[in-house]
Amino acid sequence: MQRLRFRYRVTAAAAGLGHRDIANAWVAALDGAGMRVARTQGKRPGPRISLAAPLSLGATSDWELADVYLEQAAPLRCIIEAISPLMPPGIEPRAVEEVGPASPSLQSQVRWAEYEVDVPSAGLSGDHVCAAIDSFLAKDSVPAEHRREHRVRQYDIRPLVLDIVLTGEVGNCHRLFLRLRAEQDNTARADQTLLALGLPAPVRIHRVRIQLDETPPAVAAFRRHGEPEDADA
Image (tube, rainbow, N blue to C red):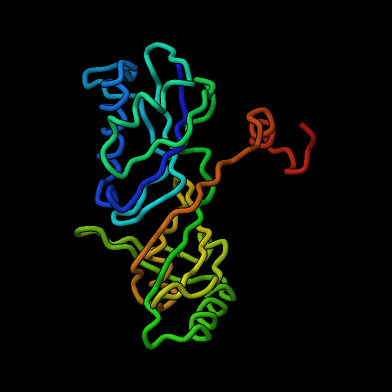
């Protein structure tokens, strides 16, 4: 069995695809290219694939990650060329590397994500945006809520926002850079962050990068047993 990590782009042509749709597209492309995706065991076996972090519907990205287990090893040099024509429009594989099968799950390694976000500038000055950012970052706590169907989740969004910067104007929009936590149990969404800032809904959300934890597994295990953060490996 071989575990592969793919980096891929999501363009506007695929911005309407959901998390499951994208995972299914990967499985179909790999199976179609003769590189069968391994399945889980049990009564309802499923493909062994995981995506790093959900991408909001309507958003685009230059830096998405997917881990896939293949039943048999395939040479890396030919994989991207083989599967690219089989992917739906807007899903563009860019790179692939082999990952140790026993290494931590992809989702557990995600630490934060970086975004470019455009908000309409009509009636909204750059000074107003900067003031909203400064006010937000100066606070220790910012209550927020996320509504999904009939459920409402109350949470503190401030610890989930690592940085916000107004980078300039593009067309009729202010462009902001956001660095947001994207851990399994601590995740901030770009649109929810703008809402907490009191800014208009974005006309564009583009994920620039997903950052993984680069701590060696041995060091991470050492720290989990109560050793200080700066202990030597």
